[in-house]
Length: 192
Image (cartoon, rainbow, N blue to C red):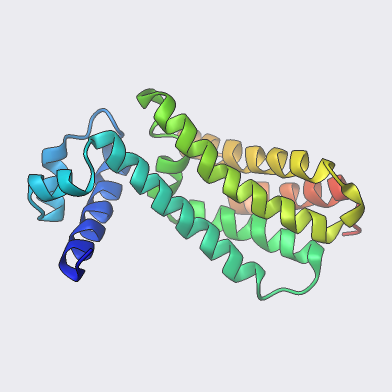
C-alpha cells in the first residue's frame, strides 16, 4: 500500500471511530464518514467494502491500541502481582479517558449482530490472554485456572465500564479499581 493510500486509510479509521462512537453503528451513515474524513466514498469502499467491515476494523485498531498501552505499562514493572495491578489500572484508565474507545469496544455494536460479537470476543480475548499470562507469572501453580480467572477479570472490567458508560457509576478508577485489584489478588492468593 502506498504512503498516500495508507494515510487515507488511517484518516478514514479515525473519522469512523469518531462518528461511530458518537452515533453507534446503525445511526452512522457512510456519507458522514466521508465528510469527517475528507476521503472520497470510493476510496473508503476501496479500503472497507462495507460499513460493517469499517466498524470491525475500527474495533480491531482500538483493541490493538489498548493492549499495546497495557503491555507498555506492564513492561516497566518487575513484580508479577504488581504487573497485574498495572494491567488492570491501565485498562480502566484508558477506557475511562477514551470514552469513544470504551463505547465502541464494549457497547455500541451489539445491535449489528454476530460480526460485532465475534470481533469483540477476539479483541477482549487478546486482553484476557495477556491477563492469563500475567496470572501465570504471578501464581505459576494455578495451572488451567489462570485462563478462567483471566476471563472473569476481563468480564468484570467490561461490566464495570459498561455500567459507568450507561449510568455514570461506579467510577471505574476511583471506586472499582481498588475492589478489582483486591479480587485479583485474592483469586490468585497473592499477598496484597
